[in-house]
Image 1 (cartoon, rainbow, N blue to C red):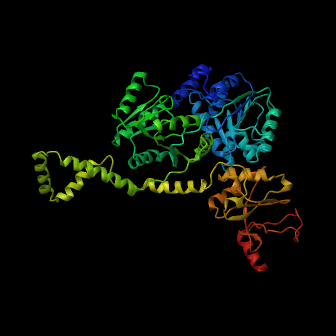
Image 2: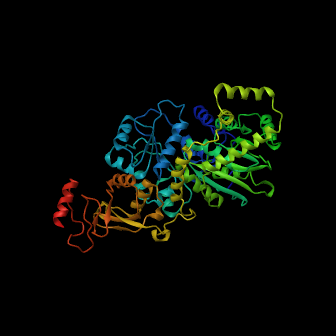
Length: 596
């Protein structure tokens, strides 16, 4: 099927004025293919199956029709969105809030494990219009009776195949079974395996089926890398990249029109010949800007996707994705602006931790793994700045110097009692005030943590995300005990989904799982940070806390005081028998010493 948008603007889709105004505010110019084809049937109230990769703009595809049909201000939620991870739930909730900025009395609530339950209870009691949550925490609320689904108009299953992979599909069916109202059901998934098709047949009625396929892969001659960082580091990172990376012409891509102007001004203030180009500019101004780039009157162009369509400039040697695109096809289009006429090109992608899922989608669509970039050190940046400064000074020495300036230097040395060397250094500092030669260490400190974390996360290629044994990834493992078992109807998929979701670990790093009558054991990479360990203790599976504890291999018992003793099958304790736990940790330790 075609992946092209059937419309040129969101106004053509019949969205209310308030939503069009909000989209213009955030800089969205044209709908992506999945949006253009999904929004009309969803506005009609039809059920829908949308098959598209992550990063194709699915959130707006279902959020905009929900908001268009919504009457804000009710006590009970009118829309429910199920997401596989808390990161995605937060992103979707933020998107709803952004699109609804001109709707009065609108409230959206993200619901996920790890957040204070009492805070969520208060917000639900106050009244929300849209609930966005992960299956485990949503089930907790349904079992408590704190979430009422009787007035739902729309239910969305976002990234259904990911929920299946994480073991949530049974929870999803239980949640859908709690809704008593007749509502629209929407399912988005990159793939449609049999369990997902079974759910769709059970809960969807004559759905529209939209399938979007990615276009051709990126050019092989483009060297692609990504830089994992925080949002507030992007400008410093871009500056450092421009200072250390040899380039002829550069295009910096942003998501919104407003950012192009703001960023172009900041880049220009750092001494670069830079100009913005976006959809707000007239065609003649855009053409003039492109001509200036071709004639080397400017070296850097800050552009949106729409403004850069059809842009073909041979001198572009570097493309920087300052904002990662939501659509994988947009990324392919962006990086294709370099490596023109058979030349080699370079593309760098800035991503935040919450955007790693979009990176995986881009890798899958482009058919190429994108490795992390090495952060240019402060010493390298300093060397480049000093080299450029020396070149400017040497070029200036070749020009005649005014006697007035020589006299002024002599006067300053006499009046201040300063040596010519000290005065020259002070003048250099004054001259370089906007771009000092000495680089602040802030980016290095922050990015060192970010880079190390990125190495741990991206240690293995992402080509295969299927189940893989922990032995295959060559990681030292440690055994843990979980206080959930067969009598609680827990499955290995439930455990994998909860752990992978809560501590953001790939399922291939979750080792062997043994499920016993009233507890389970699981192997996880050793050296788990204390904060993650404490967080996992509070995570709930099927309404029960994991209450995770380390298993002491030598002693055959839990490695933390006050925890259960580990019993091997066939031991003196009958399977399923209750074990007593000491509330007081000191008392437990003293009791154990007496026993030993």
